Image (cartoon, rainbow, N blue to C red; front, top):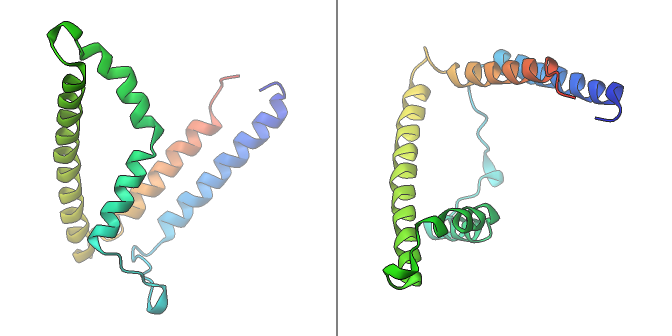
Amino acid sequence: MSLPAAYDTVRYAGAVYLLFLAWKSFKSNGIAAVPTGKAVYYYTPSAIFRQGVITNILNPKMALFVLALFPQFVRPEAGSVVTQIMVLATVLNVIGLVVNGIVILAASKLSTAIARSDKYRRLPQMLLGTVFVGLAARLAFDNRR
């Protein structure tokens, strides 16, 4: 920010790159490339679950979220603090499981419907291209310094 010309150069270069990505998205035929042969890897459900657990345990955002939010709801005079935190964590996990499960099921159904429809096959590329154009415009016309 101390070198406005350098900032503007990087900003405009980023906007041009985003427009290039948008153009590539709009020009795409809507058929996803599927790896074949030895490039395809299959993971067992237990391996996927294990990866998810490790990722969540090592995620510092979750620890910061819990440290910032939970103390507001813990009352030492109401009983065991550990029990209260465990109840709050369980409620948070159940809500996350339900919400994420609904999103996963909806996305699965939607992606299947889009893949089967010739009319909507390019819809994801059009949406992605539109997002890239919007980000490029925001970047190009950003006046914060």
